[in-house]
View (cartoon, rainbow, N blue to C red):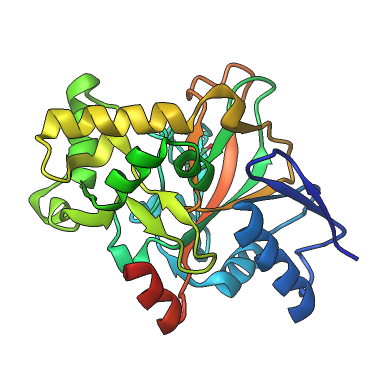
Amino acid sequence: MLQLKPLHPDLGVEISGCDLSKPVSEADFQTIKDAFFRYSVVVIHDQKLPAEAQASFLRRFGIPKISQRKEFHAPGVPEIGRLGNTKNPDGTPSAFLDRHGNLWHSDTASDEQERILGVTMLYCVSTPTSGGDTMFTSSVKAFDTLPPDQRSELRQLTVVHNFNKHNDGLLAKNPGSAMPLSAEDRAKWPDREHNLVCIHPVTGKSCLFVTPTLVKKIGDHAETESEKLAEELVAHATRPEAVLRHKWRSGDLVFWDNVAAMHSASPANYEGGERLMHRGYAYIEASAEQKAASAA
Ligand code: SIN
């Protein structure tokens, strides 16, 4: 029997009473999926989840997105990527060290408007004794707590996100902190125009959809002004009382809705040892009616 325990007034629920290494019944999966949309972030402790079992669970949500970093795929399971600071015996990295994660973002900010509804799923294989927490905030609450006039203004605006801008920004600050991209790779990341306030395709709620480091333009504002507005909105969204901080334990599975929640890793200097996560993403296909309602 599944039990649900909310974790924060704005988002997050812990689900207990399930073993995801075994087939999950349709009824239990529906409970988990409903909880996912209701609470935006789901935490399930004490799982023993081989990469293939995680990929099967991920596929029940939608269409997995395969990471371009093939060298870090779990062996034989391309849907799952290794993320962390672990090394091979020869000293080369055995996982992708995401130096970018400690910025508030949505993992689908560089995707087309129709594909922003996605789940990210992290399974914790090992965690340092200090550092490496993941933080979440509700994009719904962030929008709801803005002044009414500002909410009306923001509803009229679109935001242009671009991954190359984010990657170039990291390289400019700290060469080596990101991978320089070839012209061919850059072409895979065109500008993406999103509604700054997205109507969530499943819940119908208004969500602030903005990832500051990718912002090129908001409405008719110039780039610098757009960046400033994005940062102000995210500063509001991430007020300390609005943040749910997850302290990892080995065997945790945490997954979140990238429209209804933003997230940030804490800085990647994991003082207390190895961090290794198995990460998967999937696009969630909303029904035609849901998509039409959210595009309107
Ligand atoms: C992510 O940003 O997708 C990963 C977050 C984390 O490593 O804590």
